[in-house]
Each structure stands twice: as C-alpha cells, then as structure tokens.
Length: 206
Image (cartoon, rainbow, N blue to C red):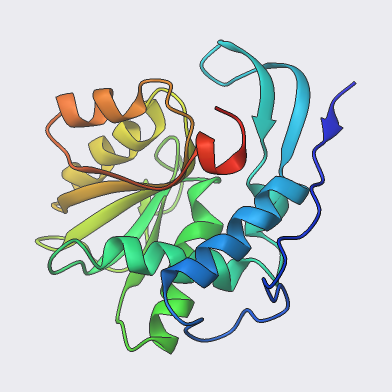
C-alpha cells in the first residue's frame, strides 16, 4: 500500500506565507518543496502513464489544487519563465498543466506580468467549433508549454503539435518536477528548450 512521506517542516520556513513575492525564489521554492514532500510524494509500486514502473509517485494535483500551494507554484514557475523572452501565454495538455497555468497567470498578475493561459485538449472537440486549444488567440504569440511532472516528454510534445496548428510559437517547455526519466532529452531533441523548477534530489528521491 502506498505511503505518504511526511517530513518534519524545515525550521524557519513560514509555510503560511504564500501570497506576494516571498523574498526571492529560495523562500518560495523551499516552501513548495516542503509541501510536495509532505502531501504529494507516495511510496509503493506504481505504473506511470508511460507504462514504466516506479517505486514512488509524485501526485502534483494534491498540491497544485491546494489554495496554500498554488501561489507558491505560480511564484516558482514565474521565476523560471522569466528566463524566457517575450512569453505571451502559458498552458499545456489537460489536465495536469491546467492548475499550473492558472497559478502562473494569477501570480504573474500579482507580480506585474501579463501571461495569458490556455488549455490543450487531448483531442479536438467533436462539436461546436471543434477546437483543441482553448483560450485566447495564440497565432504568432510565443508560448511556454507547462507540465506538472515530467516522465517521457510525450504530453508536452502532444500539446506542442496542437499549438503549432493554431500558429503559436513554442518558446520552451517548463515543468514543476523533473523525474529525470528522459523528458529533457526528448524535448531538446525535438528542438525546444527545457526548463525544470525542482529535481528529484531536492525531493529526496534521487
């Protein structure tokens, strides 16, 4: 049976201080790491979406939909995306990317950014306008494809395929947690920059 890893809080990390700029990326990132380790890391025998087996699972939706943690995710990812020039919008394949994009958009506003967000369906709708990409018009705009946790890189590339069809310019792929299972290599081989906020070693999983 899967067990949650619940470490003791890091001394001096004010886990209730979540809104606004938290004194730089270090404070926000450290708080986010503590929440992920406490509430989103499970140990056991798991089969990933890729079909690969794993002895742990990082269930980011346990934290990305938590009101305490979403602003931290937004802060950390805004700091990461700041490395990329002229980003107009962020989003990715539903549903893992959806709360990440929302967090980036809302926390970005608090920090003076103007990122829009978008949602990429796994398949085009079979009714209405038949859209696969939902949100503002992205034609000619630089976008960053988001993912909560990376495994093979397949999900971001599926989103990329749909975004290219609507005329978006792919500025990069950014993930919250990189599992170090080949996604970086796959994304970079496809010609896109890859950015990761948190690695396995920071979660005590490497």
